[in-house]
Structure formats: structure tokens, C-alpha cells
Image 1 (cartoon, helix red, strand yellow):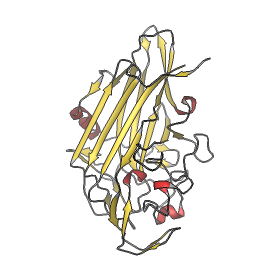
Image 2 (tube, rainbow, N blue to C red):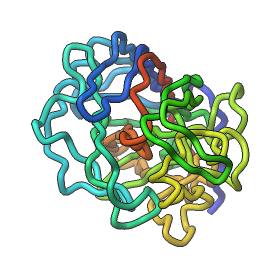
Image 3 (cartoon, rainbow, N blue to C red):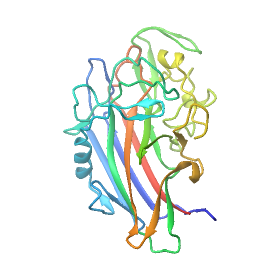
Length: 315
């Protein structure tokens, strides 16, 4: 069967982007939040979006989307990505409440994203999306839903103070020393669909040194070089963050590169029937990983820019 990736045009594209400003990690007893949290979700002729699975629209207001995330109170203690366990904090606080997003993190104690016995004390942003295909060309009964190469997580470099002495491949750091870090290197993106959990390696916008964005180290080069970026902490030095080279890579099952072919990067399929195309439900997770509270202090002011982009692929 011939397969063709549709060009990125309004007839087949859904873009979801949001920016957090004054973003701060919550480390041990230190608490901070997000002063501004703006969202932009737009569907076009080809993809409609819903936050309840019933009412589908081409766009969702920022206010509505904030309410959606603020209401995410489910207990995800048993939900696991391959290599990552996600759950709310013990007090079951809202992930986003009164426009404040919280990422709580104590010392990481076990595993990394490339290990099955992963860490379990991670807070995250989570929300459900329902996608519906509305295409005029019914000669193609099946369409694949996938993310485009433009999906990214990005941030800016910030200077923070090291809490304790730390040795890396490059040098020995002294407690109190100022280090330059990029928070996007510790942000992760995951999609849950029909019981399948996939963590995605995102691209970086063109102003970054590599195409890794929020991904792991690639051959020790670029912004993700463990000897150059303090996001590679003492914990990461013991449990290296291996690159997501392929969805089929050993020990990396459940991980996908955004640039993988659509057969490897497919989220689900839209199938046409007399009632039209089926609806696809996604649960999106964005979380912090690889941050060691024993060594890195809170980032007092920062910005995280997340851009999710979906497209239809003819099957």
C-alpha cells in the first residue's frame, strides 16, 4: 500500500503551543511557580479538537485550557511509561491551580528514563485531548495521526548556584559555584493512547545548538554534553541519559524520535466508516526529569516553551 506524508498545510495540521514564564522548579522545601501560563490551541480544516470528547472545535481558548489542566486530579500512581513512572505529589495537589504550575522534585533515587525501574517521585502537567478528522477527500479511508518535526520544548540558559560539590567528566565543581543550565534539557514529553505510552525526543528550535531540545545526550556534543551542561548532575553521572536513537533501540522501547518515519512515530489511525472517522483520545504529559535537588538549586526565573504539532498521514 502506498504511503505518503501530507505536507504541513492547514488541511492536515493541529498546533498546540504554550509558554510558561517565571518558571521555577520546586526543590525540597523551596516553592515557586508560574506567573503567566498562556496556551494557544488551534485546529484547522482537517483536524478538530475537544477537551471532553463531545464538543469539537477548531480552537480552544486559553481560559478553557487552563481550567482543563487545573482539573487534572486523577491518581496516576500506577501509570508507567517505559522507564518513567509518573504520579501526583502525595497531597494530590492540582498540577495547575490559580495559574500556578508546580513541578515538585526531591532527590532522585532510582533509575533513569532509559531504565525500566524508573524514578517515581515526579510531578507533571497532564491533560486529555480528543482529535477528530474532518477531511474532504474520502478516497483515502485511513489516516495516521503523528507529531510533526516542529514539536519542541525549548528554554533559555540560566545561571544557578550549585548546592554541593559535584564531579563530572569535565571537571570538579565546588559548592556555591555558579553554573549555566538550560531547563529544557530536563523537560520530557509523553503521549498515552489506548494503553500505549510513548516518550518523544523533541527537536529544538533553530536557535539551539542541536536538534535534541529536551532529549538526552547525543555522543557527548552540543548543549546536551554532560561536561558542558549542569543538567547532567551527580545522579545523571551514575545513571547516564542515553540518546533516544530509535524507537526500536534496546532498552528504549517506548521512546520515539519526532523525526522517525510515520510507521515508527504513529500515534493512532483514523478509520472511515458510515459514521465518519473515529475519534482519537490522547493524554499528554510534560514533566521534569534528571533534576537532582541535592546539587542544583531552584531556577528563580525561567521560561519553558512547548510546541505540539500533529498532522495526518495518508495510509
